[in-house]
Length: 253
Image (tube, rainbow, N blue to C red; front, side, top):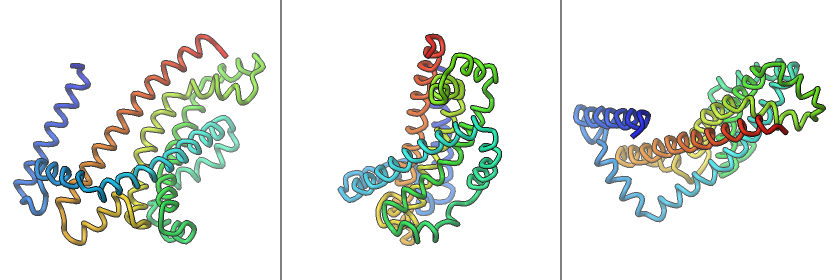
């Protein structure tokens, strides 16, 4: 077992022990422990309606993630490569990043209504800014010699982005994607809680007024596991992409 895997297992064990301790201290009614939560999640997983809610969340998150990643990386490459565009746009992106997106709830509802479009919009809004900021920062950190070499070689702007800017900024881009897509998942859930009648966020909103803490904790555990899985998947994809970019730099355009 690798040291990283061992440390993760230790951290997981400590988290479960802390969770169980809090459940004992405050009572199972207020905070269900790990095993009752897993049992409730098992019951929910056998309900076709709950599986349908999972599908609705995955559909909305998938669309929001594609929009956030595409726009975030594209805008980040542009703002990083163009000094003027970056100076104009970066304060706006920082303000959007810091702004609590729930304040845009009335505007999103007026534009998109209640449904899938609103959930996707909420999700994408959460992810675009961090991805763009990390990407732009990575491009600006590229040594100027790389760009000058591309010009000397006669590369077009598109080829420069593909063979120089994107590979050199790949570590920052992947960091931005890991953070941005996690926030996109959060935004999608916010959209389901306030602007939808389906999805896991909607299930949470239905359970909270009923004080159904078992369902709340079960859905929360499922979302926590999904976020960890997303992070690990992006980490693996990022490592593969970095190796591919390194090989492309050695072989050249």
